[in-house]
Image 1 (cartoon, helix red, strand yellow):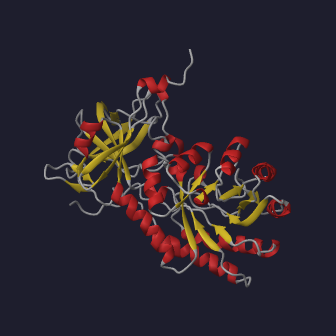
Image 2 (cartoon, helix red, strand yellow):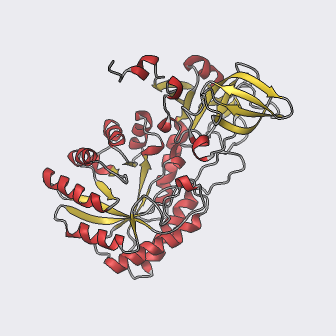
Image 3 (cartoon, helix red, strand yellow):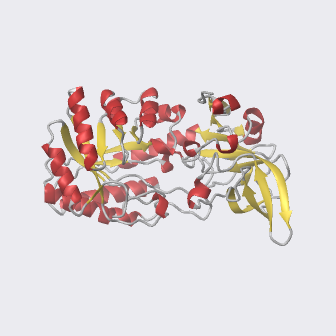
Length: 433
């Protein structure tokens, strides 16, 4: 076994032959068997993380519900696994709703999100009898109420508010600040939104929702967020605010220099903040909802690439090209995400060379890792990019006609293909020429 690595999945080890392994499966052998790029998920790590979240809130004695934010990765295999672990799920589109239902999530454990839900998506959700719809704006109040009337139901809803708390994270993944496309502003809009929901005969207000953003390391932000929500509940009346969703956003380690809080610390921060804030108004503590996405699946997944061309530019840098890139992992190009690759063929060799790891796409900005410290690379080596389990496959595209990668689950020495690699025929399959 290799030393504990906060970037790789928890079962990472080194084989007798000196290769990197996950779930007792040799990653070089997996690359040979399934081709590259391929995304590999550690099933044991996924289950352990789901149980860790559930236990963290249960051990605090608070009433809580762990809801998986499926936008991070909504493959059927991971959804079924998390369903079996007792998690609920949030979906932000008709496609994610379809996946959740196909994975067997009970509709009452499904939460519908989105800042611009279409009439079709709302109708599909209410037809499926989803448990809760999060109202994100004034237009949605009538939209959801009208759909509920057509279906002859009273729909449970939560009102999403922007608490005005600006977390320390990248601007592209911050959502709690006042200047946001999400939710009702607490300066007037939220009060009118709550009143409009309460006035509808086909909507039942059950609580408030606030999400600060993603990749959070500073847990102190939950204190002011909870206080803002408690103040608002006291102002508008808290009799029907029995649920408060503080979002997810717990960060993960993408490099060895990252030190995210533990799941237990995250749960403690949320639970303490909520209880303290509502007690200050003499109000009972609402049920706490938590929405982990990245923290649930991010570290559990790695992406394997095959090294192709190696190009030294004397006096500047050396480029190492791989057979994927921005079509299967957009995060570095989208908002500067940094990763720390490992050479699967020789994970214990000294990392004494610096490479710019680039993709194969026709873009100068197709850079996976700007400055990667690695052993000397050779054409054909298998490069492992850890912590790519969130927002890799979910954001994948067919740019440059690149088929989206296969996905493999590993556990106890066995590997199973859960999503096949796309074919060229798949890419053109929707064309009607």
